[in-house]
Image 1: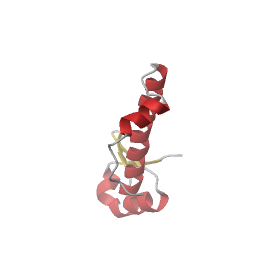
Image 2: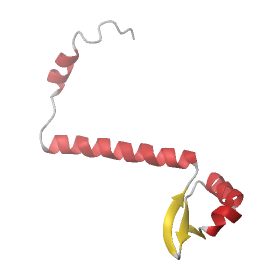
Image 3: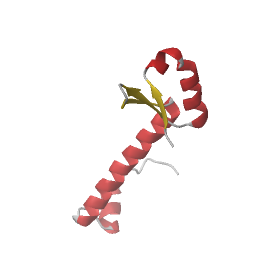
Image 4: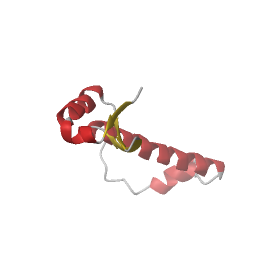
Amino acid sequence: MPTIRPSSDLRNSYKQISEYCHTCNEPVYITKNGKVDLVIMDINTYEKLVERFELSVFLDQGLEDVEEKNYKNADEFFDSLEGRYKDVKL
């Protein structure tokens, strides 16, 4: 169940809201005039959300490329790398 707080709590209970976000790693929904207006979360949760979104976009693009047959087979791929990384030591 999401945590929902009125906008007045931002001013009156900021510390409590911040501690909740940091300890529970969950967002808090802030309402204004009875309707959800904002979502607040700690920075770590936000960064993980952004990373997941970026990965999802990347995977969607990959699936689209496969559907459109927009890819190289393994031989073409390795041929395209030849000479590019000859100075890299493993």
